[in-house]
View 1: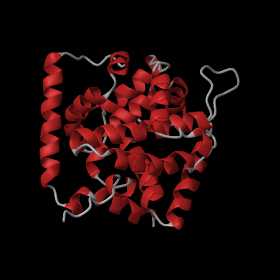
View 2 (view 1 turned 90 degrees about the vertical axis):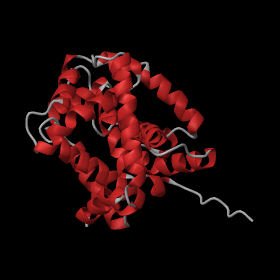
View 3 (view 1 turned 180 degrees about the horizontal axis):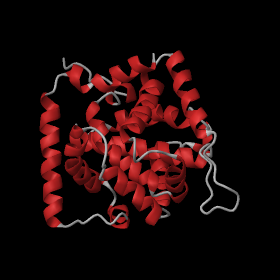
View 4 (view 1 turned 60 degrees about the vertical axis):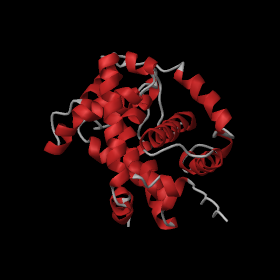
Length: 259
């Protein structure tokens, strides 16, 4: 008798380090929301410290998904403390407030959609049951700060509607395009990061929706598309032979760092 397939949830797939390959996509989708993009441009050293921001984002996600109550409390307090002063001046356009539930919902949505896309491209397709389970688990990432549970779309179909409606309203301007350029063409940082950026730029551009890729003015065409597909195939092949301890090392290391 064939053994029943093991059920999988966010705690199972979220620890896969290869999902980090979608980090640039998620960040650029966040920047394309004018309020978030201008808040980052005016209040963050994001371009000067992309690794720190990535570590903090990953640490938050790992703690919410797989951390102890103390770790969850620590990352929530850290994020709320950093968000509190991030508010636009009266009359500024676009207005923003980092504690705004709608903006936080979009950030969580970009993380979820990107994780699902990257998992499909670099690891494999999940069953409908697993996709439903992962989606239900992901609600905690969106609702652990200021997003009320009722604001998180009720199921994957509702999320798809929300996603399409948000994509149609994204706008990239010179300010947010400048932040993206500073992120993707770093002038400082460790040598390994700068050496990895050509591949990171290719993967980031290839994973973006075409309309957003165009707004960020990425050069794209059949040749770059082929290079992107080759890069995806190579990353997928390497990931398949990596031992579990390496694939899960970032999660374990960051949870230890949180304490």
